[in-house]
Structure formats: C-alpha cells, structure tokens
Image (cartoon, rainbow, N blue to C red; front, side):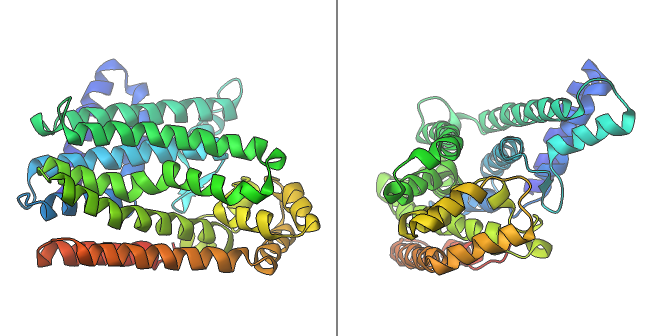
Length: 348
C-alpha cells in the first residue's frame, strides 16, 4: 500500500513538473528511482508504532506518514552522497553522479561535475519539499502543535545538525583530542543517523495513533539503542563489508574520511604511530586496496573492531530487553521483533 501511495503522489508531481517544462522531469525521475529502493525500515517502524498504539491496519494516515519518512530518507541519502563524494548508492550510480553522467553523454558545456552536484542538491531539496507535503497530507493528527508534528520537525533539525557535526569532525578531527574521539563519534552517530532511523519513526507512528507519554517513552527505550546498533553495524560494513553485498566499493568509508565510532576507538586506543597512520590515510580518495588493507589491520590490532562489536551487542541487548517490557499486542510485538533482528543482524 505504501508503494501505491508513493507512486500516486509522484505521478501527481510529474504532472506539476511537466507543466513547468519537460526538461525538469529528470529531477523527479531521480527521486522516484531512489525512493523505490531500500528496506523501508523507517516506514515500517512508523506503521508498527501506529499499530502498537491501537491504530487501525493500513490506515491512510499511517501510510502517508510512511511515505513522508521514505521521501525524507531519500533526501538525506542524496545530500549525503554529495557531501561524501560517493559515486554509488545501492549498487548503482548515486543521484548526483547520474546527472554528471547525463552531462557527459549529452556533451553539454561547462563543468559536468558541478552540474551533477548542483542538480543533486536540487533533487534532494525537492525530496524534502515533497516529504513535508506528504506529511501535511496526513491531516489534523500531523498539524502544528501536535506531538507527531513536533517529532517530525525535531527529526529533521537533528539530522541536519548531526550531518554538520559529521563534516566538521572530518576537517577538525586531526586537531581534536583523540581520547575524546569516541564521545564525539557517538554523539554524531546518534543525531545524524540513529534517532531518525528508528526512534523518531517509531514514536511518530505512535503519536499519530494517540499514544500516551509512557508508551512513547517505552518506544524510545527500545528504538534508540536499536538505531545505534544499526548504525554501528553500518559503519563496520562500510570498512569490512563485501562490496557484492553492500553495493559500495570496499573501504569506501575510509576514502571518504568518515570518522566513525570504529575509527574513534582506533584513535583513542591506538599507539601514536597508529594515530599518525590513520590521520595520513583516512580521507584519501586515491586510497588503494593495500591502503584499505593496512587501515583494516590497524582497526583489528587496536581492538577497535572488537570494541565496536561489543557496543553493538550491548545496544542490541538493551533494545530487546526494552521491547520485551513494552505493553504490546502479539502482532505489533512480533513485527517489531522481526524488524529489530533484521536491523542488527545484517550484511548489507
């Protein structure tokens, strides 16, 4: 049902853009192609948050909220790939790369890379706009002053702030005290990714269905550590994952200079030489396979991978304990249990 709602909504937007100019349609095509993929984790969490709070099955308001979350996720991915200068997404070219390739294929003038990034930014902005339009279409439950609106607004603010802290850490990182690297990395992970991946979607669905403060607090106790475990696993896969499974080149996070919790553990626990080597190699876009292998070895030798895996296990245990304590009916409980397992026990 979510897919049908998304298709109908984007078909309407296609009419709007076509009325402006057929040349504007590639912007929407980029949004459409990206929004069709993915695991739908956020939309599913929102839906089962709704159901757990007594919401009716497949209610249009719950479905629209899920579409809004998927469009927001698409916007975040488009902008994140531009920031990270990542050419791939889900096994294919990223949105800004699609536009730069179109520039080259058409033999247009001026800088193709700049055109790609500029068009990608606009596609991401369009996604943000469409996400807001769809969330407003939920109706009175999502109106100004409601708990659901507060959560939706806070989610967007936190992601932008977390993304800024992330890029700030990349440029200031070598000058920061390495002993506090883990604290900074965990804060970035929480606000850039974890809360909007799990906590905000689940509580948003619950709020739309009229959940009280106690249930929403219980949702948070379950979903925040789940989101942190999910993102920590993502960071591990970004360095040690199989490209055939992840859809990203091996070691891409290292070339992009991501100062993840994994890297932070190596910086805080490694020798001076290890720190210097990490600083010298991390963020090198030309890092070859040998360089990737060397950084992986440092992450193993310093105990960074082991520490990250231990943290994933800790957050996972906390999340499942909190889920067991939630006052839910069997169906939403089973659905959330399945989603939680798929989030933390994955290879892509």
